[in-house]
Image (tube, rainbow, N blue to C red; front, side, top):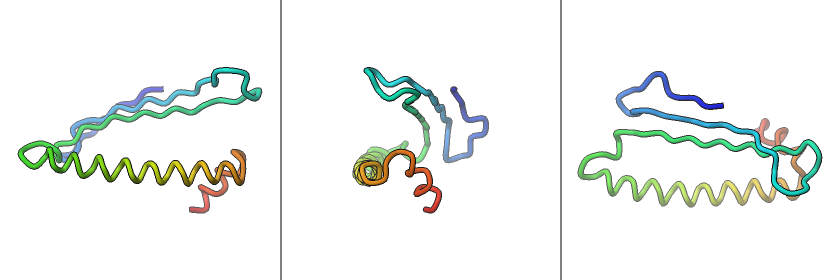
Length: 92
């Protein structure tokens, strides 16, 4: 499934997202699927003289936050199993 942004404000120039369900490679469990979501957005907040510095700060913060989130998700999956994660996510 693919989507694109219909409305753009003065802060966001455009956005494209792709969502796919894929069968994992190898002999994984019957009925197992991987959900892949990719989004690319373009904003005007990172243009101009200070844009280079803003981009570097945001990129560094996002990498750290994503590592933390993925470690948390990995530990929850290890403890609770994949079937119980949606119930935990709904509570938060």
